[in-house]
Length: 100
Image (tube, rainbow, N blue to C red; front, side, top):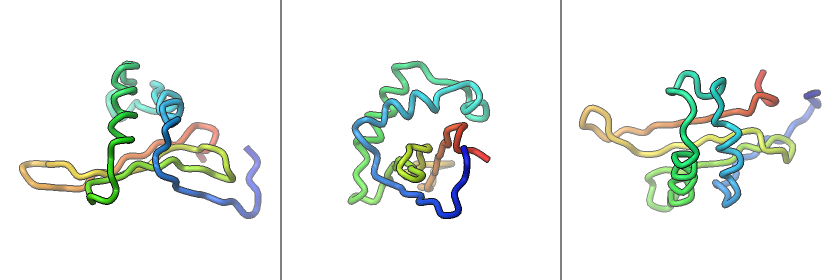
């Protein structure tokens, strides 16, 4: 992808049609360091969980990343527990054509 001088990057709340993005991000190459691809059912469940996150309760939110209006990936944060303590975790994925 040719890079323009000025690019517009936006984070928008996770969309109803975000399942297609999750499926594109669920490849062996993009999930190599997080245990590999998930089953279709797990990806569908992940999409439902992302849609259910309510930013007003402060427990997390997922976003779609767009670059010049094109979907480039996802990023988000959520509250979880680690070693018995509440912590914040984040996750992100960038489609291959937008990496580099």
